[in-house]
Amino acid sequence: MRRDHILLIWIGGFVLALLLYLIGPDRFFDALWDITDTIDAFARNLVVELGVRTYGVVRALAIAIYVVFAVLAVLASQRGHRGMWALVVVTAACMVLIWRPFGIYPAPLSRWLTALILVVIGAVVMTRRLTAPPALPRGPVPPYPPGRPL
Image 1 (cartoon, rainbow, N blue to C red):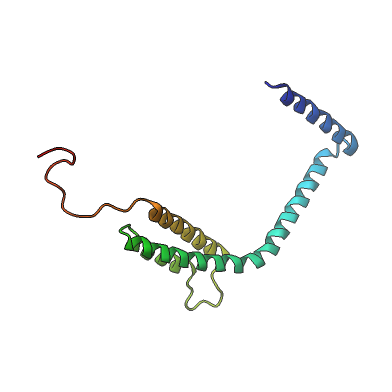
Image 2: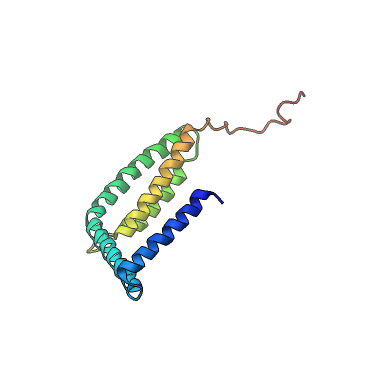
């Protein structure tokens, strides 16, 4: 084991001893629980505050990335790659996730986030297909193995 790791273990022990002395050994676990509760309350308040603002951002990103995915899928299908079925499947999945024709409330953030992840994956796949070499032409299979003379 390296010496600096051993040194860090010793330093951690001395810091623990100092904390135990300052807080008191009998109140140490209570202080740890108080710190944990404070961190938890801060994280929950932060999530609530950001959740209100995040909803619009996630919706805008999901719609914009869907448009990017749709354009890339059409371009990929025009270049001979598979793209139209992906467009149909992703469109149907997004509609199931976020479309609420008679709903009073819009779709929850979790559904929009799932749709965003889905269209990002689709856009990345279509980008990889467009940057790959062109697909081989689909035609009849030659009667002999390629590379061998008749």
